Length: 264
Image (cartoon, rainbow, N blue to C red; front, top):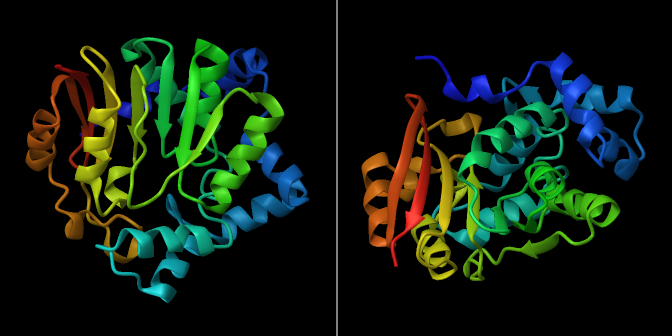
């Protein structure tokens, strides 16, 4: 099956020539170099050394050295907090892919208050702030990648509100749109996260999810096998959380993109 999300990612040439000049912030790799006092060559070497496919080998090795209980939110959160890099290296050259996610979500955005739940290094939050002029809250666990994101927000978009996630008490606020992409497969208490989203929104507000249902075992930090994350279960929980699915697209056999609308 063709990976649907690929069609939203611009070519390198188009991204550099047409998209980057519109932005008020540079590619994330430049910020990583500044933040960690690295040369681009040093960053590229680190990136190459820590990669296996699309995964961050440094973070995976750290996960398995700690062998956390995948059902314990605090233990899972510690993996990210105590890691050397978090998702910094995996996200080092992610600008085009993040722009593809922004482009895909853009038609479904409602209102002017947006929560980017699982912001990582902040790419998506910056796109929504810069290109859509939205009031953005960017949330993630305490981690090296979130520290980098906060550095970027302070430098380029100080009105983006960073929100550190308490792993046992997901945030509740007031957001017209919540974007949560490639996150729930890492979360032990994902049903509680959906409940917090529901408590943060009212009738016709939007929730945008992208979920990987693949169980990758020792080659990623996905805990779908332990946390009961299955497509039909997710659909049921979305309904139970007072949302209706207005758009659903399977990108490939393991990835589904959902757009949901609050019903109360």
